[in-house]
Amino acid sequence: MCGVMGVIGSQSASRDVYAGLLALQHRGQDAAGILSFNSPEQRFHLVRGAGLVSQTFNRSAMNSLSGDAAIGHTRYSTVGRTEDRDIQPSIVPQPFGIGMAHNGNLSNYKALADKIRASQNRYLQTGNDLEVLQCLLAEGLSSSTARENAPGCFFFDDLRRAVELVFDVARGGYAVVGIIAGKGMYAFRDPNGIRPLVLGRRDGDGSHAVASETSALNITGHRPVRHIEPGEIIFIENNGALHSARTKVTRHAPCMFEWVYFASAESQIEGRGVYGARLELGRALAKIISQRQAAGARSSGDSACESLEIDMVVPVPDTSRTAAIALAETLKIPYRDVLIKNRYVFRSFILNTQEERERALKIKLAPVASEIEGKNVLLVDDSIVRGTTARRLVGLVREAGARKVYMASTCPPVRHPCFYGIDFPDARGLVAHGREESEVADEIGVDGLFYLDMRGLREAIGLPALCTACLDGDYPVPVAQAPEGFCGEG
Ligand code: SF4
Image 1 (cartoon, rainbow, N blue to C red):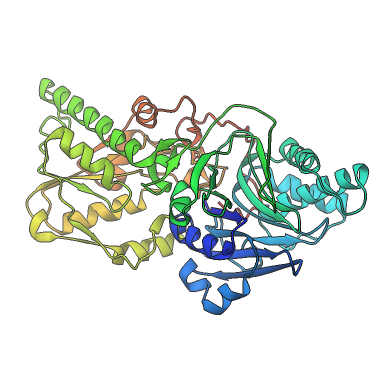
Image 2 (cartoon, helix red, strand yellow):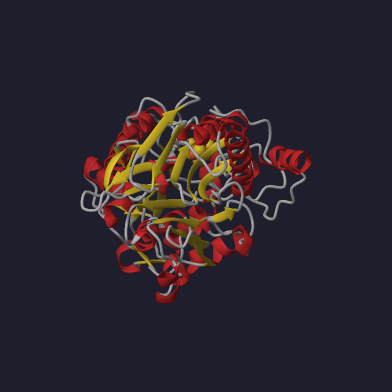
C-alpha cells in the first residue's frame, strides 16, 4: 500500500501534491517524493527522501519543484528496505522523458524483470516493480511512436497502445500516475481495479488531479469527478484536454481492506464512503456477538459465550473506532476509549520488521487502568493479521487489571497471503493460517474471539464485487506462488 497523487494545470502543482500527500500519509510512511515538470524550461524537478512527507520537503525543496504538473508518492515497502533508489517517483529518459509513481505490486515481478534484462539488455537499478512498469511503458511507447508518428509527435492512441501492452503482461494490482515530459499527465489502473484511483477537477483554475483517495482531493479543492475504472487509461494534456479509454475489462475486484483498514475514514472508495462502511461493519459484528450470546445462553456447554458479559467496548485506535462505536450502540454496551494512543508513534502495521512493530506497539498504546480494572473488556480491532499486535494488546489490558478480555475483528480471518500490495506475502506469518478460530483465540490469549463473517463483510461494504483473496483464497489475478526476489512498493 502506497499513496499517489498527480496534478496538472495548476500554478501550484507541487504544493497541491504536497498537501495531497499529507492526506495520504497513512498509506505509507517510509519515504516520500514529488516530481514536477516545468514546461517553459522543459525540465523535470525531483525531490525524494526517507521519512514522512513533512520531513522530506522543506521550503527550498518546495521552491525547486516548479511547473504546472507534478506527481507525488508516499512509500510503504511491502518487503524489506527503503534505499534512496527505491523511492518514488522516478524518471526514464526515453522516449520523451517519462515520470511515474505507483501504488501496488506486480505478482509476476521476477519473471518480468528477468525478461526485461534479457530482451532489452537493460540493467535494472532497483529491486522494485515500479521500474519494471516504467520499462514496459517506455518500450511500448517507443515502438508505438516510432512506428506511427513523425519524430517528437505523441498522440493519446500511442499511450493507449503502450498501456495495453503493459496490461497484457503485468499481473497484480497497481494504480499508476505519471508525467510525459512536455505532453501531459497520465494515469491508469490495473484491469481488476484492485488498487484505488480517483479523478478530480478544480473549478477555479480547471486543473485536474488524480489520487489514491478522495481525502487528498478534498484538501486541494479538487472536486472528485469519478473513480478511474479498472483497465482505464487517462491522459490530460497541458491545455486541460482529457482523453480516456478503457481496455482489458475483466473481473472487478477492489481490495476490501481499503474499507476495513487502509483508507482514511473521510474518503470515498469506488463511490462507497469508508466511514459509512465501517459503521456497518460494526453493526454486522454486533449481530454476530448477539447471536453467540444467545446461543451460549441456550447451550449448557462451556462456551466462553455462555457467560459472556461485556462491561465495555474498547476500540483499538484508530481505524476501528468507527466500527466500535456502532458495535457498542447496537449492543447497548458502554463505549470507552481507554487505550490512549501516543500520536507521535508510527502506525505499527506498516513498519518493516517484526522487531520494529513490537517496539512501536509498546510505546504506542497506554491503557487507562483505573477504568479497566475488574472489568470484562471487548476489544474491537479492524483485523487480526499476524496476531502479534492483538497478543500484545490483550497482555496490556490484562496487566491493567481486566477480569476478562474478548476481542472482535471487523474482518474475517486472514488466512492467505496478499500478492497485490499489502504486507503479508507469506501465509506462514498469518495467525489464522491453518488455525481454527478457537486456536487463534488461544494464540492471542483472549477469553473469547469474534470475527465478522464473509457475508457481513460484503453487505457492510455493499459493492457487487471485491477482492477477498486473503480471506478465501479466491485470487482475482492467478498467482502461482509468492514472487521471489521481490521488493514491492505496496
Ligand atoms: S488479497 Fe486481501 S489485502 Fe490483498 S488486495 Fe486482495 S483483499 Fe486486499
